[in-house]
Structure formats: C-alpha cells, structure tokens
Image (cartoon, rainbow, N blue to C red; front, side, top):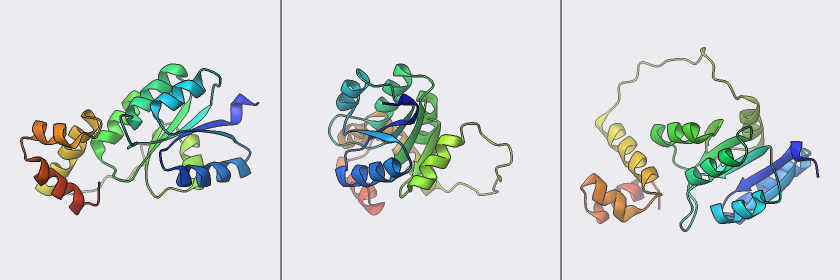
Length: 178
C-alpha cells in the first residue's frame, strides 16, 4: 500500500465518513476510517498515513483536538485538516498549535479538503476587515474556548463559565449545537 496517498478519516458520522472516503478513493487515495482516538491509535500502529481529516467533535470521550495531537506526535509531517460544524477562533488556534495544517467549517467538500492539504503556509494577502467584535461574539468565542478545553463536556463548561448547565444548553441550542 502506498503510504504517500494514505488518508485517515477520524469521523464518528459513518455515513459522512463513507461518502468522504469514497470521494477521496476516486481521486486515488487509500482511505482508512476511525471513529475515535482509540480506533485511530490502533490504525496508526500498522499504517503511516500522509493525510488526515479529523472531525472536531466526536461522540463519547474522544476529542478531535486530542486526535490531532496524537496524529502529529505519530508523524509530524502528516497534513491534518480539522472539520467542524461550529467553528471558533479559539478552537482553530488550538488545532493549529497541536499540528493541524488547516481548519475548515462544515459543510466542506473533497475539493475544499484537498485544497487545504496543498495550502500549508499562510498568506500575507488575506484581507483584514474592520469588524468590531460584539459582546455576543465575544461570549460565543469564550464558550467555544471552554468547550474545547473540557472536551465538549457541557456540565464542566457551565461550571467553569459560572453559569447554570441549562443556561449553557439553551445558548448552544440557539446556535444549533447539541
């Protein structure tokens, strides 16, 4: 098996992972699939993927950020793209610190992900906007930051933020995060 086109997808939504995997296979990749950090560790003992796509929020006790850290420790040259349904600056920064080369919001297609693999270095030509940050945006960023720190544990996040668990759950529901 050619390790140069070996892609590991860490995604707990098996239907999405299957669709994404098939799309990459049509482009010449060999695809492995894991649903958790533990599954990924087992695969990494036998394989050395050059690429990885990691969902930020995994079911159970797995965290996408923990997976990024594991992958980067296993192979510092691996190109890792993190996908998330609820992007925030805090989690994007953390993902890059841990070894991801890119961070994309869902829905992202195979073209977006493959382009992200090829876009490792940053660019100085990114347009800077004159957007003032609202209190709601700052609050949302802080919630995401603490969610990432607690591996998406709602009770612990609420405790750290000094709010009732139900209040946090309502805020997340408003943003359609469950």
